[in-house]
Image (cartoon, rainbow, N blue to C red; front, top):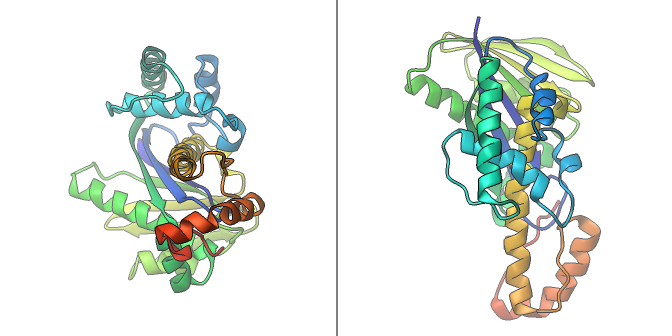
Length: 283
């Protein structure tokens, strides 16, 4: 039986500067495990895996190549900044053909970027970064599910794969909040994985929250998509501040270097009337 597979992951969970990016990929497949495709894609020159390993600081080339190969296969037009257009278009064709040979379809990719001001507001509401991440992620998932049902997508099982959120092992209360009135069966709630089954509007859902989820292709591509959006945002962020302070060294936004950066921009920040709450993530 064919089924839908979701994969979700984030980039920018730890920094104080720049957005938290949360991404979702959606697939249709004849089997529940499509991670074998990672090797087929790698053999064709398309690396899909843990974004932290694929991204090389200072160069977006490898990360962008994989992300845009997938994105362009959906007929979305994006101009590369680290690769040439022709090579990316060629990779997109290889990506689509590889999936087609195995009767797998990539249906959609989405990313939600949460900037500092919204991040701080949500943190005040939810009290922890892990809960904040869970709410953003589940909001993306539920929105996608409702969109599929409204769009008349055939009723078929949905497997939802998520990298674990801030080390959390128990997600029953969060799932109950997003699926009110539905019976949720907790299959297991452990350190390595937490699994839940739900029937939502007649459609069987299975959630899996996994440690090292990037070994699963749908999560790996989501990881890369989120990382790509985050890095593009940081390029713009650094470009803005360097337009104000030309000799300013750029930052990736992580805590120790973020403190250096914030100190360096403090005077200009005050002159521009930019508040800490709109710039600096509290956690």
